[in-house]
Length: 444
Image 1 (cartoon, rainbow, N blue to C red):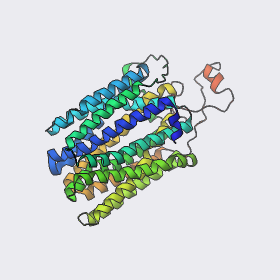
Image 2: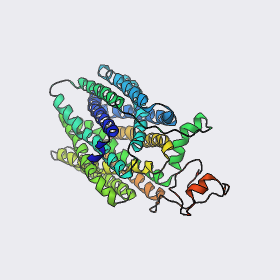
Image 3: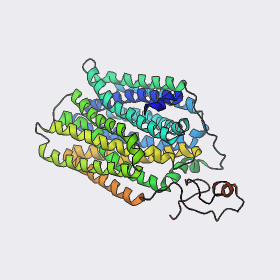
């Protein structure tokens, strides 16, 4: 897995991602504590609303950024977005009202919505070999997981020395360091073909490719299951640990670290697992595990929520959900890479970013309100039902037979068309993706 770090450009991008994630992880812990400080027992509802605003920013901004990312200098664009995020993060310690959290979160996440898909779409260009790219995906997942583990643990240590408001300073420094590392790279750039498209067509191109591709429709359904599990952890950990169990800030960090630890364990296994198993089997198996885990936690919460044994149960449950969550999201980059031409990847990654966050837009406020109004048993049960629905939809939308070369013809093209001469000359066909010459999936 670490062999891909021999590529200097990827190494610097990976370090930029890792440092920025560490800073973001500190902000995640601090934001939950800030919400509890402002709203007390209603912290889940406040945090759920703040994260729903984050999703609105992602959904609205990402497609616009993806439409024009291939025409902008990527390095300067990524650096600019990092600096915007650093500036907003340094303002968060000074808020005293919930509405101030909402405004700053919207600005911060709008910059992230422009940064992240552009960053993700750059990696396949830096590492064009699929084996290298698969390992880069696992390494990227490992970076997210290390953040989930290291950031809460670092926060737990820092909280013994400083007030949680100071954790936001670490977030700002992380974004500044990320910008500096990106500045040291030379990023490849594809020259996009000239298309006579309007703004609407440009901004919806990635979404149209996404929704016309069966494997990606299945991926979106599975993302709903992933969102259900992760939303329960992100939104209600602070409420369960501090409100229900009466434990400390450091215990909140420890619970989040258990989820991150499970995710790290899965990320270390995935490269070899994906060499032997199809992406579909891994993803659907993970979704089934998340559904079962949430359902079991609902039953255990109903019977044991206020007993002394519930704390270790919560840690084990978070660890298992972390394993399943990592296995459900890591292979998605492989599906995106093989589902678009290079010039369409920024738009497709932006579509994945926006559409997947529609799932979190549903789950974040819902799980917060369920926990606040009806208790944590209802929150676990509601998310289990959503995860089950996502899993069943994926089985229906994503056929088990999913070849890359799909038989098709071009009755609309003249016999001497360059595409027929080049891609269909041998009679076997070519890797099929949705593009200008292939506007729909065969037999759909």
